[in-house]
Length: 125
Image 1 (cartoon, rainbow, N blue to C red):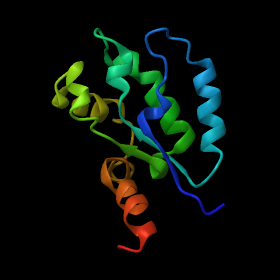
Image 2 (cartoon, rainbow, N blue to C red; image 1 turned 135 degrees about the vertical axis):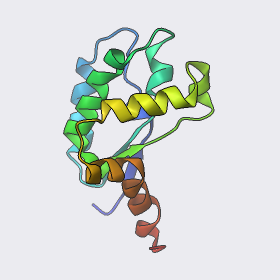
Image 3 (cartoon, helix red, strand yellow; image 1 turned 30 degrees about the horizontal axis):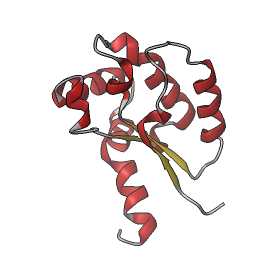
């Protein structure tokens, strides 16, 4: 019950094949545990060469729905992200995909949650 788990890369959904059903079920099961957090990272490299906002939207929406902004952590995935796109394109895409979040939620996803998980849980804050 005290264990904190951070899942990298949104648990690597199979965006190329497009069958997100099993991934959605697995994510929902993981998110049911309050000590589990998820990084919003690595999606671009899972999406293939011709990715777009619409390719990533179902994954981002599901992660936000299941984990919420207080357990979702933006990750740059740099330098691996540059295999598919410049970092700036990924960052802009994430900003756009999270555009429905309010200022506090965005602050949590883009830094606050990471600070809380990686620092406060180790007594650094």
